[in-house]
Length: 138
Image 1 (cartoon, rainbow, N blue to C red):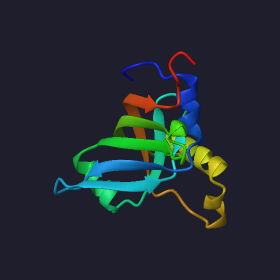
Image 2 (image 1 turned 120 degrees about the horizontal axis):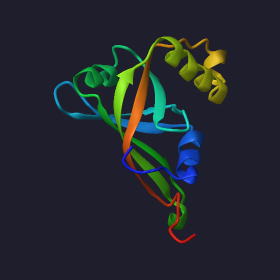
Image 3 (image 1 turned 90 degrees about the horizontal axis):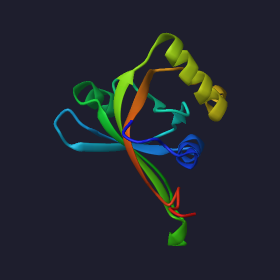
């Protein structure tokens, strides 16, 4: 990772119920989808995708993604966002099991609909920026 991540940023990422991941389709056009993320507390965000989804097909061609985690408020002094630049890779085995332990703990809805792991993807953070999460001098 390009710079150490403050605890407040890690907590903001970990608490996010949804984020948007931006990828590039196989024909080069941009594509953005909302997903339910889990964070390992260090440098990886995990998501689950349909293995033949537009996003999954795009990741096979270009694994670099942008991840936006934001909080909107009508009082714009309360706006917060974290933008992550990541490299995606599919995970299996013990790493997938650990990711799904986190997913089920954070999103119990997955168990109520009997959701099973599909294409579990690790989004390894290479760089990041934030606005409003950590206030300088505060």
